[in-house]
Length: 87
Image (cartoon, rainbow, N blue to C red):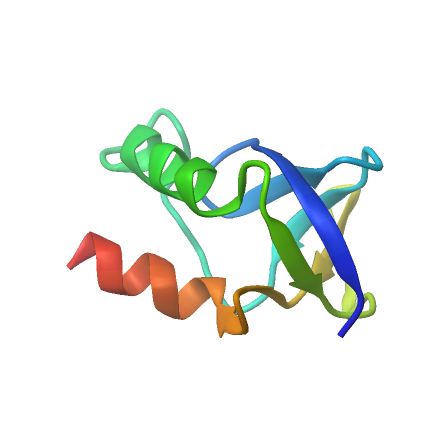
């Protein structure tokens, strides 16, 4: 899986990498920022990705102008890491 450096979390299921590409994480749906749990999801995702080397799959599709891709941290899929933290 190609690598990229995480820049920031845009919300609980969308990130931006250092190249400027905005990625919607495949296999995970977080609450919107104005919904209950939305800000907490964004904060948790930020802790997982900011400044870290990420595994980023090839594009699986697009959603609202974002590239949909699988993303991993240290080989672990972000959806599993996020679900573990929010339980």
